Each structure stands twice: as C-alpha cells, then as structure tokens.
Amino acid sequence: MSNDILKELAAILEARKSESADSSYVASLYAKPDKMLEKIGEEAVETIIAAKNGDREQIIYETADLWFHSMVMLAQKDLSPDDILSELARRFGVSGHDEKASRNK
Image (tube, rainbow, N blue to C red; front, side):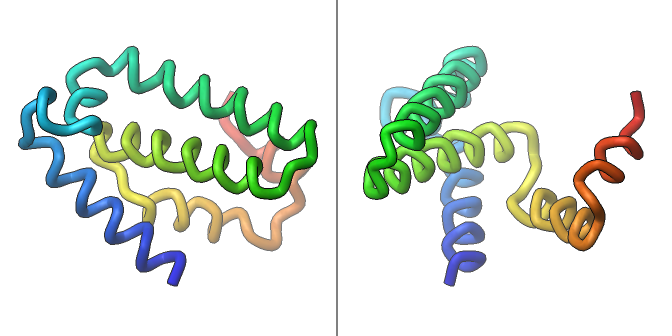
C-alpha cells in the first residue's frame, strides 16, 4: 500500500506542474521554489517538536506534511519516490558509519 500511495501522489504532483498557481497549492509552490523549501524546513521543525512532545498522532501528522512537501520538491526537480527508495535500498545492510565514510567529500 505505502509504495502505491507514493506513486499515486507522485503522479498527482507531476500533473500539477501544468496547472495555474492560482488553482493549485502545489502549483503555487512550484512557482515559488524558495517558499517550497521554506515549507520543508517548517515541517521539519514541526516534526521535531512533535517528536520531542511524544504525541504519536502529531508525529504522524507532521511527518506526513514533511514527506508531502519533500515530495513536491522531488517532483519539481524531476525526481521520484523510486529514486529515493533505490538509494535506501543501496544503503540497506551497510553500517551507517561505513555509508557515511564512503560519501564523496
């Protein structure tokens, strides 16, 4: 189910690229990339606060907002959830310390 919803959302976000900023929230974010990036930062902070407060429902809500706005950014950059899932699969089974050390400086 989760991968299906990511694919469905990605398709909707792609379709919003051709819509007017006045008619679509997502299209309005595409029209103002700095605003889109600010929303990711805002949602990240709200997710952190929810986690610190330990409110399960608020953590879920804020993380959904963070993922949504991150997906908008990915779509704007012509990237898909599959690109991110492939990177996660590449890292699977690799020590976090080893993965970090292998990154290009």
